[in-house]
Image (cartoon, rainbow, N blue to C red; front, side, top):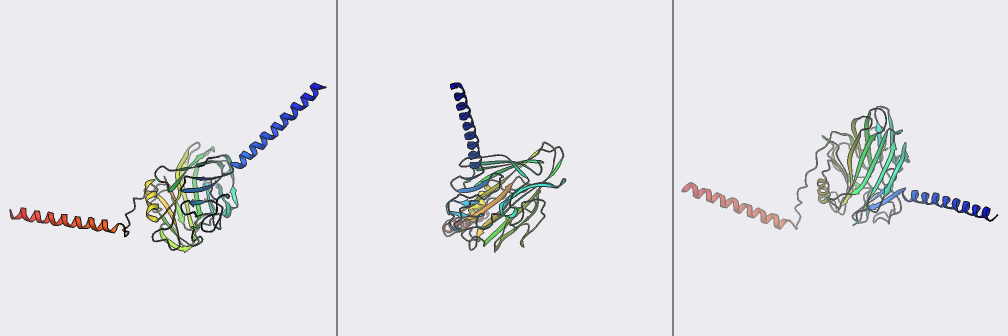
Length: 344
C-alpha cells in the first residue's frame, strides 16, 4: 500500500512537472512572440514574422500611441504606428505564383508564413520563417549598426528550400506617420533609378505586402523629393532573379531617424545605402527637424549614396567666409608672384 501511494505521488509530481514544463514553454513562447528592441537612440517593435509594429511601449510624444514601429528616442516621436499599422514584407516566386507576406493592417497579419524561430534580447531580434508553401526560408536579423547610432540594420536572407528554381520577388512597404504631424508628412524616395533589383517604387504605404499584388501609388512613383504634405508612405518591389534550389540571396534594410535631414543622409552614406525613403513632419521638410526618419536598402544593385554637402548655417558662415577670404588672398598672392616672375 505504501509503495502504491508512493508511486501515485511520484506519478502526480511527474504529471505536475510536465504541466509546469508545458506551461513554462507557453510563457516563453508568448514572451518571444514579439520584441521591442533599442540601441538607446532608435527603438523598433518587431513581430515574430519579421514585420514591425508591436504594442507595449511607452506613449509616443505626438499621438501618445504605445505601439512601437520605428521610434526616435531623443524626441519620443513614432513614425509607423499612429493610425494604420501598415508596415510589412513579402516574398514570392514569380514562376509558381506562390507568396507569403505579413502586414497587420493592410493584410490582416501574416499570410502563408510559418515561424521556425524567433529570438530577441534588449538590442536585437531574429525572425526565421518558412514562406510561400515552404518554397523559401526567410531570415530577418535586426541589429544595431556600428557606423551610426541613427540606424538599425535588418539583414534579410532568402533561401530557396524547394526542389525547383525560383524567380524571387520581395516587397517592403510602410505607411509613414511621422510625429509630431502624424498623417501629414513629406516623403522622399531616391536611388531607384539605376538600381538593378528595384522593379517598382511609390508612395503607397497602404498597399498589401504581397509582392504579386501589382504596382500601386498615391500620385508618386520612382524617385521624388518632398512629396506632400500627405498621409502616405513608401513601397519598394525588388526582383532578385533566378534562385536555384538550395541557393540564397541576402541584402540589408535600414530603419532609423536623425535630428535633421543632413544627419540622416550622413547616416545613410555611412552604411553605403543605395536606395532610400525619408519621412519628415509637415513644416520640417527643409531642415528635417525635429526628426527625419529613414527606410533604406543595401545590396539591391544600386550605387551607394554620397556624403551630403555641409549646410551653410549661421554657425558655419564665419568659418566659410574666413575660408573664402583666405582662398582669395592666396589667389591674389599667387597672381602677384606670377607678375613679378614675368617682369623678371
